[in-house]
Length: 63
Image (cartoon, rainbow, N blue to C red; front, side, top):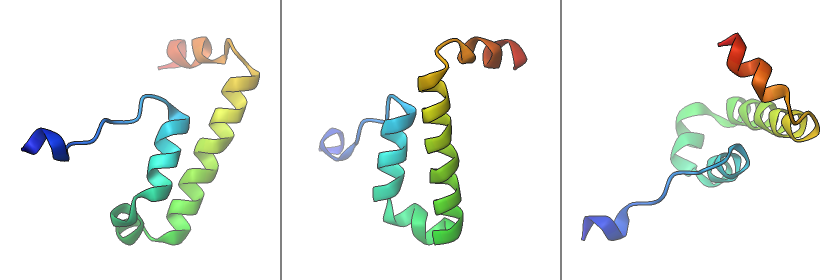
C-alpha cells in the first residue's frame, strides 16, 4: 500500500536538519560540501532562534 511507504515531513527546523543528514539521495545530488554548509546555516538558525525567543516576529514582519 502506498500509504505504508510515505514518510511524514519534518515539523521543525531541527527535525529537518536530522532528516537532511540521513538523506543519501540529496547528498548525492547536492554534494557533501554544499550539504555541510546548509546544515551549518540551519544549526546556527536553530541556536539563534532558541536564544532569541521573539526574533521570529521580526522575521515575519520582514517578509
